[in-house]
Length: 270
Image 1 (spheres, rainbow, N blue to C red):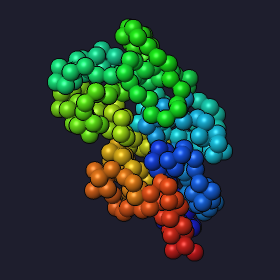
Image 2 (image 1 turned 135 degrees about the horizontal axis):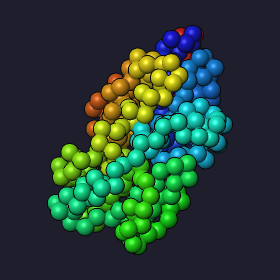
Image 3 (image 1 turned 30 degrees about the vertical axis):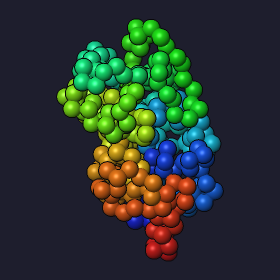
């Protein structure tokens, strides 16, 4: 344990957790994280975003530690600007998985995250990108398979994200890991991969363990991370599936939920 905090590792999701709905990090949350790290804890960002969609946020934070990106596929050293580990999705298996899902629910809208520090996110016809993150359109499906991928994103013209994730899991769960990371964000990952996979690798590099870890999240893709960490904190805006497995529920991302918990823990140790 650190002298001022009962956990030596603070793992935070980004969207809906560390980031407010306007995409910023509040001064209060920044200050709480600084206080926690000054008390001896390490902070690790654990996000579904791949490195190219994460790097600008880390730079804004002045963050030079390890970050787990791409739903656990990538462990990124922000200080050295390099990938330490990267897991890719077998493209043949991904093609089989897509075919099985489409056989169940009909045509899908598809996007894909290419591997690497500068990997593009390719977006096919009909796919709606969340927010203003950069992406590259494609119309020829062969472009989708032209380079290594970390994951695929799928959307459906009628099914909502929970319904699509359930259908995809039923149709292709033996080939890929299916996660729901937010409304409009259903992802197909290498089988067995999760945020817990990447977080455990990053923690090991820091000489830390699950028992040292408090984790914050808001969506079902955070469930494996909560299962791995000693203490899981769901945001007030969290999906009901994550709230069901959380050790506690804090305030929402717009109400400084991370800071509320860290300030309490620091005050208890003072």
